[in-house]
Length: 277
Image (tube, rainbow, N blue to C red; front, side, top):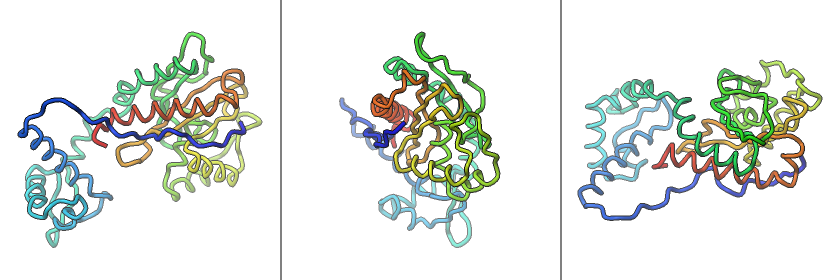
């Protein structure tokens, strides 16, 4: 796998503007909801305390308007008021998050998108996320004539030797990534598996720069894979999408087209998960 280009399509695309008649009251209500959520998203860290004035600057909102929304968010428990008139995110959001079945949601929203790209590429397509240092396969989509991958939905695979895993590892904060590299054993699953820790660091740095990753017969001797990240509305990597095949179906000349198709699928996926992002 010698191609070292970059993915042309962004993994996040803007939502097309909506058209059609809208009443002024409906637009006003919609804007109010957007402004309210912009305040919640202004908190950048779990332990961050911000004043109402700091929040108004971050969301570019008049102080009085922002303060009224902050008071309402405090009343419902979405944020809490602490010392010196500062606020932080509240328990309501944590309670609500427990009702979100993330894997099931990703599977349901993503399956039609994955089926489409699998059919266009005639490759087996996977959706996976990082869980306890392993790749968890959320779902797998193949075609009647695509390469019969050994993976299955609900299974786990080592992250350091898979395309999905490399994308997910490359998105980790430096301290977490270094902990993974130093603590785990890099066992050779094939002659191509990267087992040198420094070589893995270099590989993952390349993934960050390129925006995609390869599995060049590293997890299985007959399997090639290309993977791209799936981002949330803030640009954080929450999962990854890959296309898998053999030497005949994932050739060097096909890699640019495969990367672009996967990036397009990831962009569509992200826009449906986060339509306001």
